[in-house]
Length: 102
Image (cartoon, rainbow, N blue to C red; front, side, top):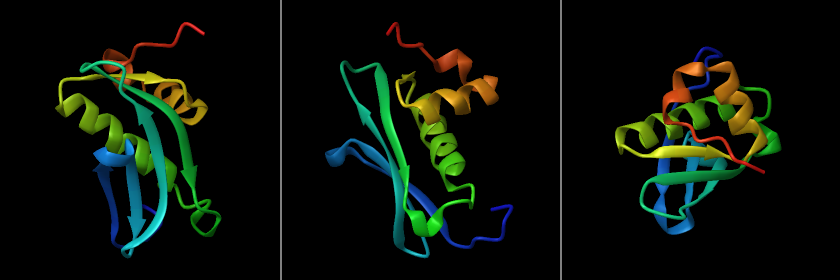
């Protein structure tokens, strides 16, 4: 990472419907999603533990999750305000985004 944080990993946990980020093997946060059908990930919440705040981990987490959504040939629905903000700042994800109607 740009800030020098070593050993950052992101993995999908399908049983808990989330992507999880770890730093040095320790859990640091997650982005939660719902699956209404087989084509969409509806992102509803993103959280980074206070101990890891301000390190850019939420951006790494969401970028990795969106890249995985794309790789799976699926689409994202950003109900989570952080995910929505991230996509607004990174329009390269607009092509896989379906904005919520509510």
